[in-house]
Length: 130
Image (cartoon, rainbow, N blue to C red):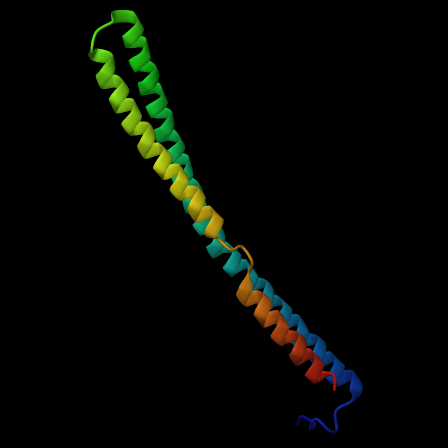
């Protein structure tokens, strides 16, 4: 039979408090890990978009270089089409890079839920020691 709270010794009460705090800390670590994992996943997608935008811009740069090469080598209107295509591809790459940077600037990496629950945990622990 278990003794009531009034009959339990100080050692038993402190043992229960330590066990509860240990469980709480483990849960907070798990919450922080989960929350940061979701944020890291989003940042990963945005970085991927940034990388694709950079690759597209690089392809545009290569097309512009090709247009300049054709211009200098042949002095025919063929360079104009390569230059226009290069400018369009570079413009698309620029838009993609700006979109990725904008998305990265908006990401908040602070684990807000964890911070809030930690504040609640401090209040709970204060109440347990009274």
